Image (cartoon, rainbow, N blue to C red; front, side, top):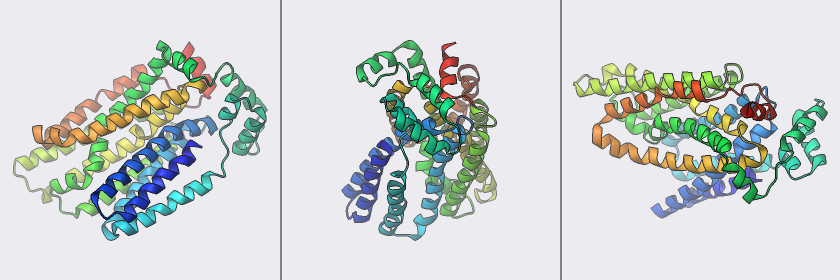
Length: 370
């Protein structure tokens, strides 16, 4: 229901964009979009984690998270050729389709069991598993939710226990690294960064190529996250983004030494493509997967609320501090700083993050208690 309702402010945002005649209309559009996006991403990982077979849970969540890359690519491809009004009309169509089609999908079986409706829980599980025998899985789901309640005050008390706060901090740390990579800021300033690279290519074309690279990377992550595992993908993502940011900083260093930007076109393009691939192959989809897996049933909403709220703050700070930081130290040191920060992702993941690949939600909870 939360996912369905998120479509309302998102659709409102596009309607405001279509009707915009002054800047305040655009502020209202962005505010409405922020509400819808916050609702959507907060609930999506939980829902997908609850309906997915453990063997494909990582792939399913990665596929949905990286679907945003397709939207960004299409937006960048259409943007130079459409008016804002027409862009709004085109973008409103998939929003309406989502609200219509998603209304046909049942609530997760975990939700029904948590509220004591075993019959609907079994019907929901059969809908998602189709031909499979769901009796054994129903018993495991029942065991998983046994003892869990919906009382917000009791759940909050349990959430504040050290073991549960540890889970929260662990997930929040992974998200923090994704913002420390500068991806959020670099996406917001993508065309400006490409223009400052002084490459021999139209900036809008370069941004479109980068968007295509994120789709390829996202598709790769969808195929590999349940084969390589969460930890390996995150480590590869961190190292790849660190190398690419170092190369991008090197390009701006060479520009400061009066090298011709056009002759160096290959360097920033390779760096930016590698960066997009690295981030979208691990740092974007994997944290959402882990968020859906580590919390007990009754604490999922609180855990997701806390992590999503902090992500909103980190996202704001990441985008808002980019320009002042750039004015203070210059382009090359900005990207070298981002790259240096990403070197610490590998040890963080290796020593602190448990591998959840292929495990049921019940098995993950049991392993956490050992």
